[in-house]
Image 1 (cartoon, rainbow, N blue to C red):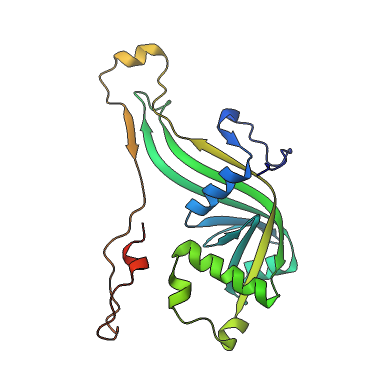
Image 2 (spheres, rainbow, N blue to C red):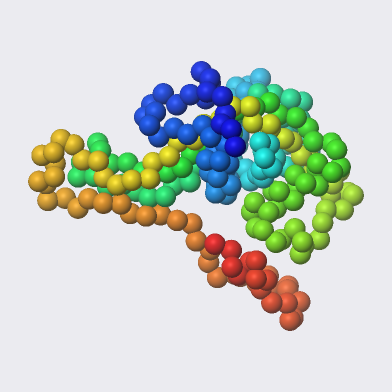
Length: 216
């Protein structure tokens, strides 16, 4: 799997040793992040919106109401920046200056386009559903014609991207800080699911599906 071309737009300049341009890493971070942030420039100025998404190969898909101003701009075609982050831990050095975080992040660039082809629309909506909760697409009712007309689907074909990863422990300096009586180490962080909460209107006898119960 080849990497993304490094250009002035996606080159990581700060802490270059953490940079990754290979598709495998970029795709893995996107797949691990539940939400991303989509940035575009509108007439009023920059706009960044948090949203769920789905990925198929080098294309990231989004959906929402046809009335959404952000999606209207993206349906018309515009330059887009997509950012996603997974925070894995708080790195506690003996000094505040050297404290940090362990993380995985991606910044990707591309031009948006409206998805009109029925086959691609269905694949995009399934990818978004699978990204949030694999198995739900096969279980829940699919959108009907009226709902489909109210739903916009847009794609961003990734042209350039970079990932940045920190996954190690404390880096204290100067060495004199090692003599300080201050606890240092890493506090791991992860997102976990809680106990499923059934809808009060749920019909009797419907058990929690395995794909819900086992979601990590």
